Amino acid sequence: MTTQSRAAVAHLGMDVPGAAAGDEDIEALVRRAQGGDAEAFGVLYRVSVARIGRYVGALVRDPAQTEEAVAEAYLHAWRDLGKLRQPERFIAWLYRIAHRRALAEVRRPRLEQLEVAEHVVDERRDASPEDSALASMTAAAVRAVLLALPEAHREVLVLRHMGELSHREIAQQLGKSEEAVRVAYSRAARALRSEIERRG
Image 1 (cartoon, helix red, strand yellow):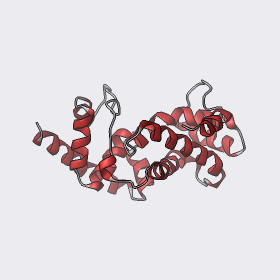
Image 2 (cartoon, helix red, strand yellow):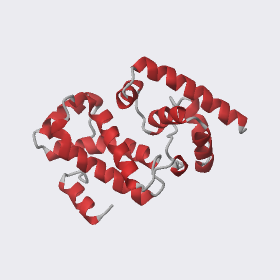
Image 3 (cartoon, one colour):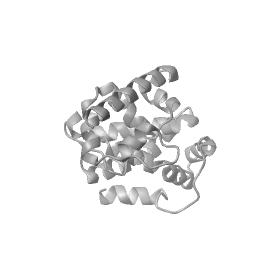
Image 4 (tube, rainbow, N blue to C red):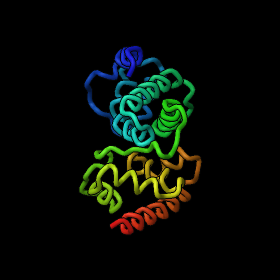
């Protein structure tokens, strides 16, 4: 992160510890932030930055570039927050901004630049079979498996498992119906399992 970006992030109060917000509070926080409340935006940052960081990290090779892209995404979000007409869609809107900043952070975005850190999939008691399989693999193996899948499969898997988006949020992100996303995810999950099994 550049000194300028770091200073701007700190100015917005994003580096100040505070209580996390539930999903039901997002809309209220967005409305407060749209009114100029930097503290409210700081809470929005704290409850979303881990997911946004994992998502950007899955698209950008270099950790420093990832950090820069995430900082820039939040600065752009703060600047353009007044343009958001549906506060309840803040997270999906933020993912779109982060996606653009991630691509801007690399000179020529290529699929080969996809790199997954070993911690992108958390071990959870309610983890899906895909979560568990990915969590047991090395970063290099995860990267190889994802790169072997068609782009459409890879996109929905990255959004679901690394971005931790719900099917509804993915639908908003991709401009598709929720049912279409569920079908696409089901196919992508089957392709993922097949590829993992094929590789042993």
